[in-house]
Length: 413
Image (cartoon, rainbow, N blue to C red; front, side, top):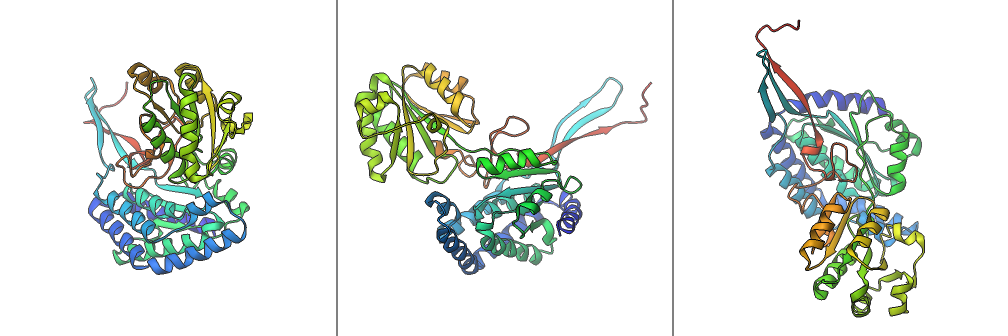
């Protein structure tokens, strides 16, 4: 079954690689419209997935990731339509230089070919992944989690129907419906068919893919994101940013999981932070210094500093300087998104320069680390590694390059 899917995807990738932008855009628009037209069927399938997930006791943050509604369907479609409006990178000649021997050597953007994506209970990833892979001339093979199987089947069926209407090969997108671990491991070893594999999900999934895959992997990481409140911070701004980053959506990788507060403002700021987060019943797990100011805080353990909660829980630590905040973040973060709230320009620049993460913010919520918010349309994931791609991965991250060389009879001596 996997070999057949791989063969069809590989054959289709050659067609997609030479497909013009106008036809790719037409395919995207048709697929997006089909998702809208099939919204009732998609929501019915999603409701079945959500009901099963709740029966199994899935955490609320993960149920939130799984659940679709009319607004989220509209968001998926809008993301696909935004990709239509983005410039097609395929075929772009990045450079062209003439060598002393007369050879004209250039570099050109090309598709990877076939991209495999393994992800968990995030049905929106199904449409996002297709849109970006298709626009860049790549075929995509998806292996979603069992919790979202019915949702994924309905979305993929709609996309394939949309492509069919434009006479585009439906195998531009394929879904592996066998969600067993054995099949997933076979998928990770499809060297002859997959050109790159991208895992999207929790730390366990990403570790499994990295350790078992024989296909090149682009890691998308978990998000232990911090907000550091500097001694010069505007309190109202800091409270708004923390509240938004922690509570707007708890089950996402760019949500704030930890706060650091400068000792000079802790006595005044921490009670205000507790009062604000009490609006959403957020549990705050704090060090002894913070608990001496607000005894209602829960005692933090060493594990809390590196924890991605995906829940209404936040860790909190008092620090004596921006340097201590940076050192703590670089020790415990996952390389995703980090923020400082400050009026001090030098501290802001120091934070930007020295924090090791894919996205570093001054006076803004970490929730903006997102392909849609960055103007990329949909995203394939947030890369927390440093090789090839880092941060929200849009169209450029899904292309490779090849050298193109023009000569007039040169031979090497």
